[in-house]
Length: 403
Ligand code: PMP
Image (tube, rainbow, N blue to C red; front, side, top):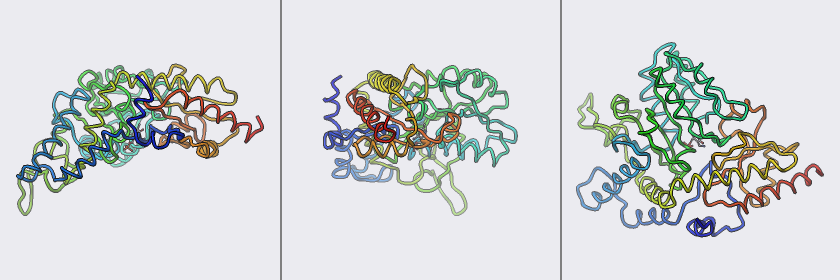
């Protein structure tokens, strides 16, 4: 796979050839095909969906629903009624918390998460535990940052109603052993929610094989526009979910005092949806599938390994997570230089990395640091960019420390 050929598809990378974008875990750049799809939508297909009988709007509705089918195939869902359009991972997880578990948890039921969760997969459960008197419990990680399955076996009990876990840590770049975890959870009749925000962009997801009850991800981290995401749920659970939003297009009929909601998925998608987001997501999936999810996983993993190896060889750098890399996410610290100072220095050198807690404060605390630097690479990045980053870090150390 030729890196330059891939980069040619991304206007931002072509227009800014000296800019190194290593913040893909925050959001990804968009290929021309996605940008063109949005322009085409506004030039030719800008009609509301599911409402009008005129043929132009009917055509847009068909494009919109074809994307639901495409997403179902992308994650190998049995039925496209299991695919709910959301604004992103955060909204999807909140919808599950407030539309389903709010009504299905009682005092002393347990919700289990890991210590390495993004706040989006922690705060909704903290909130619900407070409201319902449920207990929030944590699976620990091993010293090398991988999920500790022995801890999972201890923490998950017959009182556990939900295990909500990320597939890929947005800080450590580890892929959690979901198959093993889901087996443990299901042995205790607990449901499983997978936060696939970092997984969907990089690894092939098969919900029939994995068999989680829920799975949520965001379009913008996989080449699509912001403001569009997917919530997958098993149909029988979605059918019991209460809509968290009420309004237009989700009802069968309404009288002065009451309403009857439509079937899934529409009852869970009140109001005008993000039509251009859905159309952009559809093109993003086409692009990813054309490159191939296995190729994407390999490119990202190899880049992650390369950067990890180069950083580990460099004096004064601590890299977090296991030696064997699985994704393109690498978090590290530089001796005696605060991550924010380091990120500012790198910014002066046209390198965009993230500094801070990456919305995973309990994990940062567990690592025993205040903050980290994070370089997160996607399949359009390359080793030359990794070398440049390492070179600038070496220069930075002598600039700050005279090292
Ligand atoms: N979970 C994980 C693991 C993430 O990395 C992110 C985004 N950083 C989210 C959830 C939230 O995604 P969004 O902001 O798109 O809702």
